[in-house]
Length: 345
Image (cartoon, rainbow, N blue to C red; front, side, top):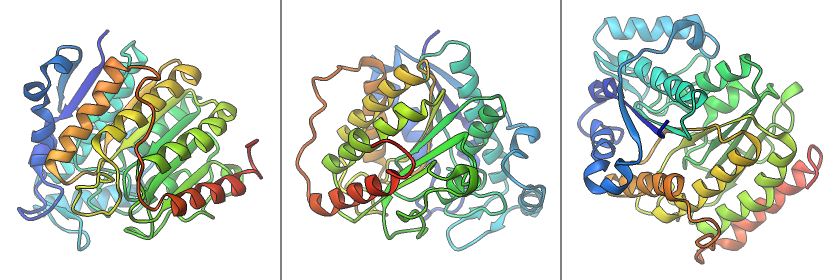
Protein backbone atom coordinates (compact mmCIF):
# COMPACT_ATOMS: atom_id res chain seq x y z
CA UNK A 1 0.00 0.00 0.00
CA UNK A 2 1.32 3.42 -0.94
CA UNK A 3 1.60 6.43 1.38
CA UNK A 4 -1.63 8.40 1.44
CA UNK A 5 -2.28 12.12 0.93
CA UNK A 6 -5.86 13.01 1.83
CA UNK A 7 -7.20 16.37 0.67
CA UNK A 8 -10.51 17.49 2.13
CA UNK A 9 -12.13 19.09 -0.88
CA UNK A 10 -14.80 20.58 1.34
CA UNK A 11 -12.09 22.80 2.80
CA UNK A 12 -12.07 24.84 -0.41
CA UNK A 13 -15.58 26.08 0.40
CA UNK A 14 -14.67 27.50 3.81
CA UNK A 15 -14.48 31.26 3.20
CA UNK A 16 -13.50 33.49 6.15
CA UNK A 17 -13.02 36.48 3.83
CA UNK A 18 -10.83 37.55 0.95
CA UNK A 19 -8.26 39.25 3.18
CA UNK A 20 -8.09 36.45 5.73
CA UNK A 21 -4.68 34.71 5.91
CA UNK A 22 -6.27 31.26 6.28
CA UNK A 23 -7.65 31.17 2.74
CA UNK A 24 -8.56 28.51 0.20
CA UNK A 25 -5.43 29.20 -1.85
CA UNK A 26 -3.45 27.42 0.87
CA UNK A 27 -5.19 24.16 0.04
CA UNK A 28 -5.08 24.77 -3.71
CA UNK A 29 -1.34 25.43 -3.56
CA UNK A 30 -0.66 22.13 -1.84
CA UNK A 31 -3.05 20.17 -4.04
CA UNK A 32 -0.94 21.23 -7.04
CA UNK A 33 2.25 19.74 -5.60
CA UNK A 34 2.16 17.03 -8.27
CA UNK A 35 2.95 19.66 -10.92
CA UNK A 36 5.93 20.97 -8.97
CA UNK A 37 7.22 17.61 -7.72
CA UNK A 38 6.06 14.80 -10.02
CA UNK A 39 8.88 12.68 -8.62
CA UNK A 40 7.13 12.72 -5.25
CA UNK A 41 3.58 12.54 -6.60
CA UNK A 42 4.20 9.25 -8.35
CA UNK A 43 5.13 7.65 -5.04
CA UNK A 44 1.96 8.52 -3.13
CA UNK A 45 -1.73 7.84 -3.50
CA UNK A 46 -3.84 10.98 -3.44
CA UNK A 47 -7.40 10.81 -2.16
CA UNK A 48 -9.96 13.60 -2.37
CA UNK A 49 -12.10 13.08 0.68
CA UNK A 50 -15.51 14.50 1.53
CA UNK A 51 -16.17 12.08 4.39
CA UNK A 52 -17.56 13.78 7.48
CA UNK A 53 -16.18 13.11 10.93
CA UNK A 54 -18.59 10.88 12.82
CA UNK A 55 -20.52 12.43 15.68
CA UNK A 56 -19.38 9.68 18.05
CA UNK A 57 -15.74 10.58 17.39
CA UNK A 58 -16.41 14.32 17.68
CA UNK A 59 -18.06 13.83 21.08
CA UNK A 60 -14.84 12.30 22.43
CA UNK A 61 -13.36 15.82 22.21
CA UNK A 62 -16.05 18.48 21.79
CA UNK A 63 -19.09 19.16 23.96
CA UNK A 64 -22.60 18.87 22.59
CA UNK A 65 -23.09 22.58 23.32
CA UNK A 66 -20.09 23.48 21.19
CA UNK A 67 -21.21 21.37 18.24
CA UNK A 68 -24.73 22.80 18.53
CA UNK A 69 -23.35 26.34 18.56
CA UNK A 70 -21.39 25.76 15.35
CA UNK A 71 -24.44 24.14 13.76
CA UNK A 72 -26.58 27.17 14.65
CA UNK A 73 -24.07 29.57 13.07
CA UNK A 74 -23.99 27.33 10.02
CA UNK A 75 -27.78 27.41 9.69
CA UNK A 76 -27.64 31.22 9.77
CA UNK A 77 -25.27 31.19 6.79
CA UNK A 78 -22.13 31.85 8.81
CA UNK A 79 -20.89 34.57 11.13
CA UNK A 80 -18.11 35.82 13.36
CA UNK A 81 -16.91 33.62 16.23
CA UNK A 82 -14.19 36.05 17.27
CA UNK A 83 -12.00 38.67 15.61
CA UNK A 84 -9.88 36.01 13.89
CA UNK A 85 -12.31 33.16 13.40
CA UNK A 86 -15.13 33.41 10.86
CA UNK A 87 -17.62 30.92 9.46
CA UNK A 88 -19.18 31.10 6.01
CA UNK A 89 -22.17 29.07 4.88
CA UNK A 90 -19.94 26.05 4.09
CA UNK A 91 -17.50 26.28 6.99
CA UNK A 92 -19.04 23.72 9.33
CA UNK A 93 -19.20 21.15 6.58
CA UNK A 94 -15.57 21.92 5.74
CA UNK A 95 -14.56 21.43 9.37
CA UNK A 96 -16.42 18.11 9.55
CA UNK A 97 -14.67 17.03 6.35
CA UNK A 98 -11.33 17.96 7.91
CA UNK A 99 -12.00 15.73 10.90
CA UNK A 100 -13.06 12.97 8.52
CA UNK A 101 -9.90 13.32 6.46
CA UNK A 102 -7.76 12.99 9.57
CA UNK A 103 -9.60 9.85 10.65
CA UNK A 104 -9.23 8.48 7.12
CA UNK A 105 -5.49 9.02 7.45
CA UNK A 106 -5.43 6.97 10.64
CA UNK A 107 -7.35 4.17 8.93
CA UNK A 108 -5.00 4.22 5.93
CA UNK A 109 -1.98 3.74 8.21
CA UNK A 110 -3.82 1.09 10.21
CA UNK A 111 -4.32 -0.85 6.98
CA UNK A 112 -0.71 -0.66 5.85
CA UNK A 113 0.09 2.79 4.43
CA UNK A 114 3.64 3.80 5.49
CA UNK A 115 2.28 7.21 6.49
CA UNK A 116 -0.66 9.52 5.79
CA UNK A 117 -0.92 13.29 5.49
CA UNK A 118 -4.31 14.94 5.95
CA UNK A 119 -4.12 18.15 3.92
CA UNK A 120 -7.03 20.00 5.48
CA UNK A 121 -8.51 23.35 6.34
CA UNK A 122 -9.68 24.94 8.51
CA UNK A 123 -6.86 24.01 10.89
CA UNK A 124 -7.70 22.65 14.32
CA UNK A 125 -5.18 22.80 17.14
CA UNK A 126 -6.60 25.94 18.82
CA UNK A 127 -10.11 24.48 19.10
CA UNK A 128 -10.92 23.25 22.61
CA UNK A 129 -13.78 21.29 24.13
CA UNK A 130 -16.12 24.30 24.15
CA UNK A 131 -14.51 26.94 21.96
CA UNK A 132 -13.45 27.69 18.39
CA UNK A 133 -10.65 30.23 18.00
CA UNK A 134 -7.47 31.08 16.11
CA UNK A 135 -8.91 30.15 12.67
CA UNK A 136 -9.88 26.71 14.09
CA UNK A 137 -13.40 25.29 14.39
CA UNK A 138 -12.91 21.62 15.32
CA UNK A 139 -9.73 19.99 16.58
CA UNK A 140 -8.77 17.52 13.86
CA UNK A 141 -5.70 16.00 15.49
CA UNK A 142 -7.35 15.76 18.91
CA UNK A 143 -10.30 13.79 17.55
CA UNK A 144 -7.92 11.30 15.93
CA UNK A 145 -5.83 11.04 19.10
CA UNK A 146 -8.92 10.50 21.25
CA UNK A 147 -10.18 7.73 18.98
CA UNK A 148 -6.81 5.98 19.17
CA UNK A 149 -6.61 6.48 22.94
CA UNK A 150 -10.00 4.87 23.41
CA UNK A 151 -8.77 1.90 21.38
CA UNK A 152 -6.01 1.38 23.94
CA UNK A 153 -3.21 3.17 22.08
CA UNK A 154 -0.60 5.50 23.55
CA UNK A 155 -0.30 8.59 21.37
CA UNK A 156 2.34 11.27 20.87
CA UNK A 157 0.96 14.50 19.40
CA UNK A 158 3.89 16.58 18.16
CA UNK A 159 2.94 20.16 17.31
CA UNK A 160 5.54 22.21 15.43
CA UNK A 161 3.17 24.99 14.38
CA UNK A 162 4.58 28.40 15.37
CA UNK A 163 1.52 29.01 17.55
CA UNK A 164 0.90 26.96 20.66
CA UNK A 165 -1.89 24.42 20.24
CA UNK A 166 -3.80 25.46 23.35
CA UNK A 167 -6.87 23.45 22.36
CA UNK A 168 -5.00 20.17 21.99
CA UNK A 169 -3.13 20.78 25.24
CA UNK A 170 -6.32 21.53 27.18
CA UNK A 171 -8.13 18.47 25.86
CA UNK A 172 -5.42 16.06 27.03
CA UNK A 173 -3.94 17.99 29.96
CA UNK A 174 -4.99 15.36 32.52
CA UNK A 175 -4.55 12.35 30.24
CA UNK A 176 -1.40 10.19 30.32
CA UNK A 177 -2.49 8.23 27.23
CA UNK A 178 -1.80 11.24 24.99
CA UNK A 179 1.56 13.01 25.30
CA UNK A 180 1.43 16.54 23.86
CA UNK A 181 4.64 18.30 22.77
CA UNK A 182 4.70 21.82 21.30
CA UNK A 183 7.56 23.87 19.89
CA UNK A 184 6.30 27.42 19.40
CA UNK A 185 7.02 31.15 19.49
CA UNK A 186 6.43 32.72 22.90
CA UNK A 187 4.92 35.05 23.86
CA UNK A 188 2.69 35.04 20.81
CA UNK A 189 -0.92 34.11 20.08
CA UNK A 190 -2.63 32.53 21.97
CA UNK A 191 -0.34 33.35 24.90
CA UNK A 192 -0.30 29.81 26.30
CA UNK A 193 2.35 27.11 26.27
CA UNK A 194 4.60 28.33 29.07
CA UNK A 195 7.32 26.13 30.52
CA UNK A 196 5.40 25.32 33.70
CA UNK A 197 2.42 23.87 31.77
CA UNK A 198 3.39 20.20 32.16
CA UNK A 199 0.04 18.47 32.74
CA UNK A 200 -2.17 17.80 35.73
CA UNK A 201 -3.34 14.75 37.70
CA UNK A 202 -2.79 11.55 35.74
CA UNK A 203 -1.39 13.65 32.88
CA UNK A 204 1.41 15.27 34.86
CA UNK A 205 4.65 15.11 32.88
CA UNK A 206 2.79 14.35 29.63
CA UNK A 207 2.61 17.92 28.32
CA UNK A 208 5.90 19.42 27.15
CA UNK A 209 6.24 22.98 25.89
CA UNK A 210 9.24 24.64 24.27
CA UNK A 211 8.30 28.36 24.37
CA UNK A 212 11.01 29.76 22.09
CA UNK A 213 11.78 33.47 21.67
CA UNK A 214 11.35 35.23 18.34
CA UNK A 215 14.23 34.55 16.00
CA UNK A 216 14.84 30.99 17.17
CA UNK A 217 16.07 28.88 14.29
CA UNK A 218 16.93 25.43 13.12
CA UNK A 219 19.78 24.41 15.43
CA UNK A 220 17.68 25.05 18.55
CA UNK A 221 14.71 23.09 17.22
CA UNK A 222 16.88 20.09 16.42
CA UNK A 223 18.60 20.30 19.79
CA UNK A 224 15.22 20.23 21.54
CA UNK A 225 14.25 17.17 19.55
CA UNK A 226 17.50 15.25 19.94
CA UNK A 227 18.37 16.13 23.53
CA UNK A 228 14.96 16.12 25.22
CA UNK A 229 12.11 14.74 23.11
CA UNK A 230 13.89 11.60 21.89
CA UNK A 231 15.02 10.37 25.34
CA UNK A 232 11.58 11.03 26.82
CA UNK A 233 9.87 9.14 23.99
CA UNK A 234 12.26 6.22 24.49
CA UNK A 235 10.64 5.91 27.92
CA UNK A 236 7.05 6.83 26.99
CA UNK A 237 7.10 4.58 23.89
CA UNK A 238 4.10 5.86 21.90
CA UNK A 239 2.25 3.37 19.72
CA UNK A 240 1.08 6.13 17.32
CA UNK A 241 2.57 9.50 16.38
CA UNK A 242 0.37 12.33 15.12
CA UNK A 243 1.97 15.57 13.90
CA UNK A 244 0.27 18.96 13.93
CA UNK A 245 2.24 20.11 10.92
CA UNK A 246 2.03 23.88 10.79
CA UNK A 247 4.55 25.62 8.56
CA UNK A 248 4.27 29.15 9.93
CA UNK A 249 7.57 28.83 11.80
CA UNK A 250 9.21 29.49 8.41
CA UNK A 251 11.17 32.74 8.38
CA UNK A 252 9.03 34.07 5.50
CA UNK A 253 5.69 33.63 7.24
CA UNK A 254 3.83 36.95 7.68
CA UNK A 255 2.28 36.10 11.06
CA UNK A 256 5.31 34.92 13.02
CA UNK A 257 8.95 35.72 13.69
CA UNK A 258 10.78 32.42 13.91
CA UNK A 259 13.76 31.45 11.80
CA UNK A 260 13.12 28.05 10.26
CA UNK A 261 13.72 27.31 6.59
CA UNK A 262 11.92 24.81 4.39
CA UNK A 263 14.67 22.23 4.79
CA UNK A 264 14.27 22.37 8.57
CA UNK A 265 11.05 20.43 8.08
CA UNK A 266 12.99 17.73 6.22
CA UNK A 267 15.27 17.39 9.25
CA UNK A 268 12.39 17.37 11.74
CA UNK A 269 10.37 14.91 9.66
CA UNK A 270 13.29 12.49 9.34
CA UNK A 271 13.58 12.47 13.12
CA UNK A 272 9.84 11.94 13.63
CA UNK A 273 9.85 9.10 11.12
CA UNK A 274 12.70 7.42 12.98
CA UNK A 275 10.80 7.75 16.27
CA UNK A 276 7.77 6.14 14.64
CA UNK A 277 9.87 3.26 13.32
CA UNK A 278 11.49 2.64 16.69
CA UNK A 279 8.42 2.85 18.92
CA UNK A 280 5.19 2.89 16.91
CA UNK A 281 5.71 0.33 14.14
CA UNK A 282 5.90 3.26 11.75
CA UNK A 283 2.39 4.53 12.56
CA UNK A 284 2.62 8.19 11.58
CA UNK A 285 -0.09 10.65 10.49
CA UNK A 286 0.34 14.36 9.68
CA UNK A 287 -2.37 17.01 10.00
CA UNK A 288 -1.98 20.36 8.26
CA UNK A 289 -2.20 23.33 10.62
CA UNK A 290 -0.87 26.84 9.82
CA UNK A 291 1.45 28.35 7.22
CA UNK A 292 0.45 31.59 5.48
CA UNK A 293 3.17 32.40 2.96
CA UNK A 294 2.12 30.25 0.01
CA UNK A 295 5.60 29.75 -1.41
CA UNK A 296 7.08 28.82 1.97
CA UNK A 297 4.09 26.60 2.74
CA UNK A 298 4.47 24.65 -0.50
CA UNK A 299 8.24 24.25 -0.18
CA UNK A 300 8.01 23.13 3.46
CA UNK A 301 5.22 20.65 2.72
CA UNK A 302 7.26 19.19 -0.13
CA UNK A 303 10.41 18.81 1.98
CA UNK A 304 8.27 16.95 4.52
CA UNK A 305 7.15 14.55 1.80
CA UNK A 306 10.70 14.24 0.53
CA UNK A 307 11.94 13.19 3.97
CA UNK A 308 9.15 10.64 4.29
CA UNK A 309 9.60 9.19 0.81
CA UNK A 310 13.31 9.41 0.12
CA UNK A 311 14.79 9.76 3.59
CA UNK A 312 18.58 9.95 3.24
CA UNK A 313 19.46 8.75 6.71
CA UNK A 314 22.20 10.55 8.60
CA UNK A 315 23.76 12.43 5.69
CA UNK A 316 21.86 15.70 6.00
CA UNK A 317 21.12 15.93 9.71
CA UNK A 318 23.43 18.82 10.60
CA UNK A 319 21.71 22.18 11.17
CA UNK A 320 22.84 25.55 9.96
CA UNK A 321 23.77 28.26 12.44
CA UNK A 322 21.02 30.61 13.56
CA UNK A 323 20.36 33.67 15.67
CA UNK A 324 19.34 33.80 19.33
CA UNK A 325 20.78 30.31 19.86
CA UNK A 326 21.77 31.11 23.45
CA UNK A 327 18.23 32.10 24.48
CA UNK A 328 16.72 29.09 22.75
CA UNK A 329 19.28 26.80 24.37
CA UNK A 330 18.31 28.22 27.76
CA UNK A 331 14.68 27.26 27.09
CA UNK A 332 15.77 23.70 26.34
CA UNK A 333 17.81 23.51 29.55
CA UNK A 334 14.85 24.75 31.58
CA UNK A 335 12.58 22.14 29.98
CA UNK A 336 15.15 19.45 30.76
CA UNK A 337 15.35 20.60 34.37
CA UNK A 338 11.57 20.58 34.78
CA UNK A 339 11.13 17.13 33.29
CA UNK A 340 13.80 15.51 35.45
CA UNK A 341 10.95 15.14 37.95
CA UNK A 342 9.04 12.90 35.52
CA UNK A 343 11.55 11.24 33.18
CA UNK A 344 15.15 10.07 33.18
CA UNK A 345 17.07 12.78 31.33
